[in-house]
Amino acid sequence: MSALKPKHQRLVLVVIALVALLAAGLLAAWSLRNQANYFYLPAQMIENPPAVGQAVRLGGMVAEGTLATMEDGVTIAFTVTDQDQAQVPVTYRGIVPDLFVEGSGVVAEGSLDAQGTFVATNLLAKHDENYVPRELQEMDQHQAAKMAEETTVGLE
Figure 1 (tube, one colour):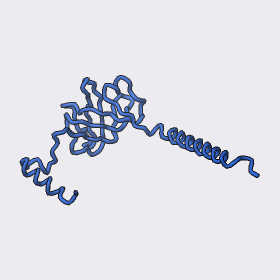
Figure 2 (cartoon, one colour):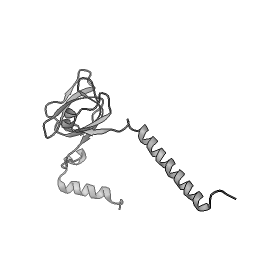
Figure 3 (tube, one colour):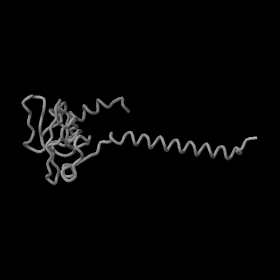
Figure 4 (cartoon, one colour):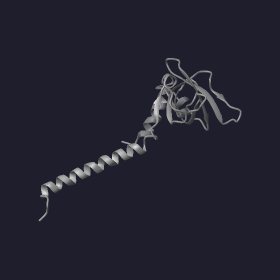
């Protein structure tokens, strides 16, 4: 005869499954602890900067008059600001998104360097609620509505 009744065997199996599930969750959380990208606004980054080299996201507006292309022609420098007028200098090497202009919203992924400059590895440009695609800019409101109607026929 078995030492445990079937009811107790099921209970032991459930407890073992819960412990294994908890251990897997803790192991996943521990292994991903350095992969999390924290989001900072400029004022937060100035007040409590992340460690040098730590992957974070910086969000705000591209300050007017700060966008400059460096001598290599590929690197740009600009300043990200927020409503509190806190400013963080940013550099980015690569192709910028089409919507990236001064005064627009941006989320930059990257890290701080030892000099306090945010070195971006990726830029995500944001548009406002008045955004109109280039294809529709030259059309009047009636033409744009007709084109939108034609492109949505058959999607329903």
